[in-house]
Amino acid sequence: MRASPHPSSSVVAKGIHNVGCLIAACDKAGLPAPARKALNMLADQLIDSQKKIEALTADIRADAQANDAAQRLQK
Image 1 (cartoon, rainbow, N blue to C red):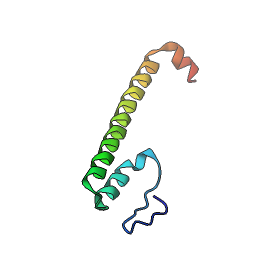
Image 2: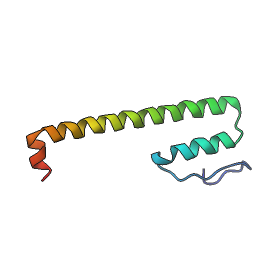
Image 3: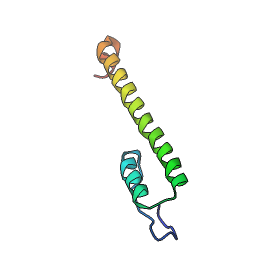
Image 4: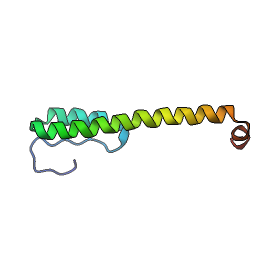
């Protein structure tokens, strides 16, 4: 959050790699339970998506290593 009238607002760098910092800042902010529940749900979805993307990327890399045409294109 950049500018917020809320006295306990936090500044966290943008980017998917900063989700952990954002989650920690939300935990420290003392948000009401329904807001924390919603934010935790969104954070879980982001983390799950990251894991799926990493697994897919690993599969694509393994396939490219095993494929002669892909090897030629990478040179």
